[in-house]
Image (cartoon, rainbow, N blue to C red):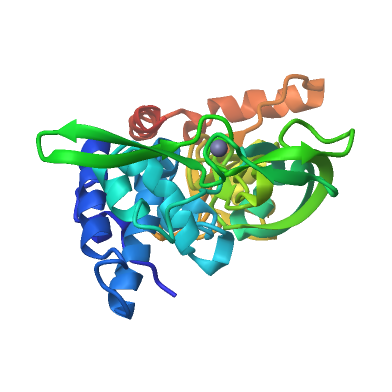
Length: 371
Ligand SMILES: [Zn+2]
């Protein structure tokens, strides 16, 4: 399923400020709000789509990843709650940030009943490191990871919050230039949950959570690189009292390859030829990220020449083709010589063919510019 561009959805440009993005989302959220469009499926979809776009563009870190890698940068898993898209609860829990807990909007939609009330809190994110070989980064890979996360402990019991009477919100009437407005904010005692912990097991923390070993499988797209972060929604710490979970942030670390180095989407190999091989040509085997490849080196190949294996590099995360393997030719000069070898070389030294000519020198100058 192809996803629409988040900037298009919100009708903003890539250079829009955080404030402009928030404003654009507010407009759409009000326009497509289900309370304004009862029973209108299309409006509901637009409402959800806008919320998902804002979830990413309204978050500095997610926006940066999206700008860099598109939807793939969000782990192919953007949106709340993983593959299932957004739930209305998630969207309304987001409203506190967009409209402010104290805003007229919050009161307009939240105060009317039904939806207002207690809100769900979100658990914190967890960061883990994941080591990948260059081959895994090239092809993409599915990896099982184990880590500890906070989950709701068994046997936690709650009692209704006395401060807010279990509603999770505190209402107040304020005078504004539009007249008297009833506004509401999250209850400071229960943080908007509407309930407080009555009793909990000894090993649970004050939020009723315990640490637990967790295992999940992460799909890494081909083309990722060292230092990139992927986020997997909903695999972080659980929120207290059945709140939604935070994200699992996966930091990619490259495992160094014995022979190959990465340079953006290309992969570099330093090939060492003996002098006879460079002079007379040779067929040699070189390592690549998917096995070995045979290449032909022409007679008279200079040190510094770069040979190219097309498409043997990394796929571009944004779909702009695939990098190459670049083979940099080096010519080995022996540091020890037998007297017999020396005699041969002395003879060769006098030969006209062994004198560097101007044409070849200018070739080296050109190579210098490339590196
Ligand atoms: Zn309360």
